[in-house]
Image (cartoon, rainbow, N blue to C red; front, side, top):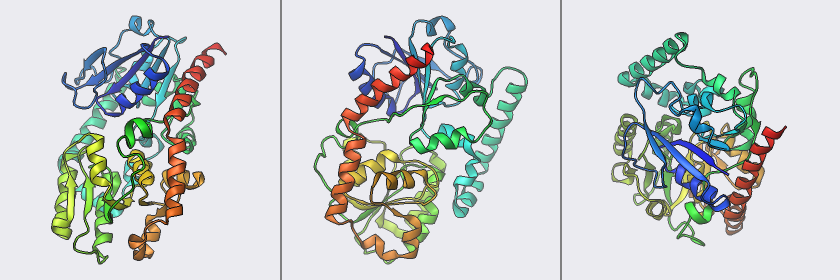
Length: 387
């Protein structure tokens, strides 16, 4: 068995390699596509790094001969610099798309629909970003018309399996277009509780009433609306609003930091530095409350950690994550409920609710479940080729 993993310089690659190697030892090769040779986040052994530039980003970068050496190809996200590779994979070789969210929500709809009004206006004020995005879209269209680049939808038609972050997102992507052939649904998750999310914090609980806001310097967090909502509350002077801004848009992150500092001063704590997960958990462990104001699935890793630790989590009602967790039996509240009842931000979960949440996430994201899903994923992909 030889499995080829294709990805970008993101920490989730290490999570995947860990679990795949535990099931199929010495069978996994990793190729990373990056703008620079020095990788910042991937620590696993990498077979090769392909440097991305304007001239090769829209074309396959790995030769067909190399792909023929592998029994299976796994795409870790279907980013624009990754999806052209599918056109060089032989028809008899199965391919799996492990979705991340950002790589398929653009297919489901317009990203601006994921932003609340204040955040939308905040993003429109970033002239440089608007120009850059516009030029990028124009270049992509031009290259497709010239036959240099192929559409992402055409690439998806060639995939064998697709596993989104949440099972209920599969239908959202499939129903968004009239596909020639859509990949079969698979079930797989990045990371396990024991090895990646709460390692070193087993049997720990939240030990404060600070507030965790969002997960990144991404506009889809809708930070501005949340900060304005919290500004209308009467928070105690010793209560922090901890806001991770270590990845995403630097420009957007600085704008959110400025708004937070203006409204809350020293009580607003932005996290600009990327840190090991153990150091990160040590900080957010003081948050008894979590507000994730996304309209789409995002920040699932953060949510898992905080549910395990017993925090009271608030998600938007239109977010697929909210419905997914509710269907599992997890006790979560909605941001809309918080808007109507400010006292919820002073209402911790009961001991029984905390225990129930911990049991559910422990079962769903356990190492044992990860091994089971990985074995099933590979067997399902290979079986599809035998049909």
